[in-house]
Image (tube, rainbow, N blue to C red; front, side):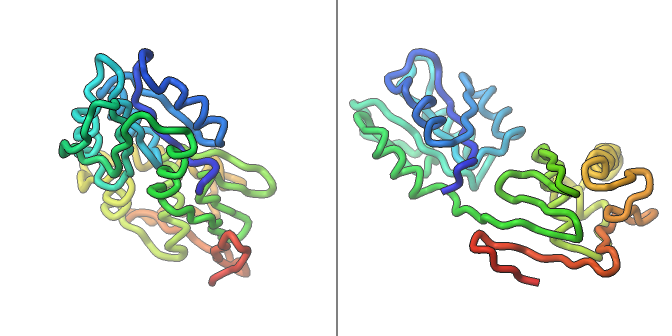
Length: 237
């Protein structure tokens, strides 16, 4: 299980399981809380959590309704819906798993381990750059920079296709999930931010190069290689 995995906990202040957040944080998870459906959907879009836990024991929060909204926005994120003891848990909510009270923290952790996405635990390397897929950070020359979700997606896309020219349409589709090309300033701004973290001189990029009227290309400097390191330290070219 990923020690740095991000969990979105949808829970109001009055809850039968208000111990959830402290327990999850103690186990090493990065926990973000949302107290409403609107806040949960906003967090889902910006934080891209690895798991969503929705607490239906709160008096003014409809867990099944929130769960269906989350599932509509994200088809792949695993969801645990926590239900009160009196609930049968047979409603179609879109949850990956229903957990009915009472249950122990050990049972919760076992369920999380069962449905949490497998850790990729690898590092992409191109020359002096190392992209940590687990921590979502990039290291160059011994200096590590944290990446926002969109910066990470953008850099990962480039580093998985070294030497290939990627069109603006493809990049917008893969990173922003849109084919809208009337305004690609957002892409240009994110490219600039990424360059500031990976280039010795962002105004004269070595890695992330502009291909005029087409898009961008992630170049592998001469004499440098591109590798992927697994958790066991194996490398694949």
